[in-house]
Length: 132
Image (cartoon, rainbow, N blue to C red; front, top):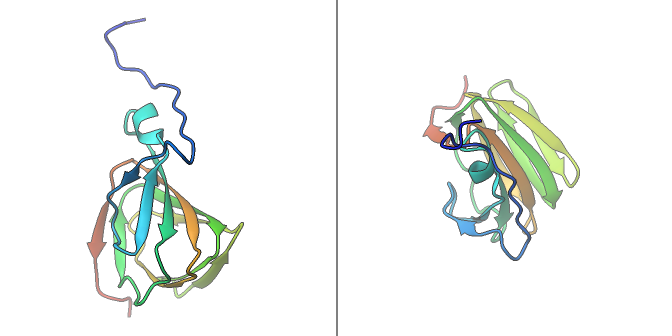
C-alpha cells in the first residue's frame, strides 16, 4: 500500500459536532455530516433544517450532479418536478432525484429537517425556466 496515497477515512459526527456550513438557501440551516471528508469528495451528506417555513418557492432549478437523495427526518416538504410529479414528502419518506432533473420546492413545514446525500460532493445549482 502506498502510504503517500490519500485513502478514504472513517469519520463520525454527532449533533453537537456537525458543523454548520453555508448552503444554497437562506431559510435552511445546513450541517455537514463528514461524508465529504471521509470519502475524499466522492459524496456529500448533510442535514437541512428549516429556520421557518418557506415564504416562497425556491424557483425552478436543477443540480449539476450524478444524483441527489433526500430522506425526510421531520416535518414535510412539497416538491414538483419536470415530469409533472408533485410530492408532499413527510417524515420517513425518501426521494431519489437524478442529476439534472428540473424541480421546485414549493413549501415546507416550520419543523422540516431532511438528510441530503449527493454524488459527487460538490454540486452546482442552476436556475432554469419551468417545464412547459
